[in-house]
Image (cartoon, rainbow, N blue to C red; front, side, top):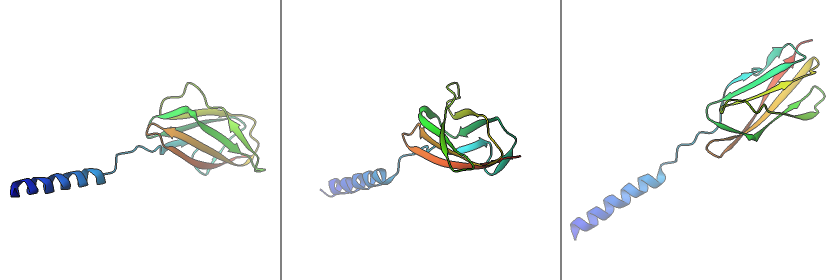
Amino acid sequence: MRQKSLRNIILFLILSVAAGVPQASAHAIIVQSVPARDAVVAGPVIEVSLSYNVRIDATRSRLSLSDPTGAESRIAIATDSAPEKLTATLTDLAAGSYILHWQVLASDGHITRGDIPFTVAP
């Protein structure tokens, strides 16, 4: 009887520890961006490249750009990007401050978003 209760206690402890261990997740984190945060770049055409630490679903991700007036427009994501990357081309950018907004669906099923402010030089 004593051996059975000891076995039950050990089993309970093992299950408790296993239930308390969070599953590893791979939220998308930018590891490199072009333009870089707070960069000053030459326009009027800018090639955007956002590299992440995990695979992302580009078809369920999005990019948008806030211009110097505050107006926001959606940006078409290139369909030939690598699995860990979003790429796009921005055209006709006048001098001023911009904010690139990104939202991605990572391979772990989580949505991550962020902003990259940059300036187009006169």
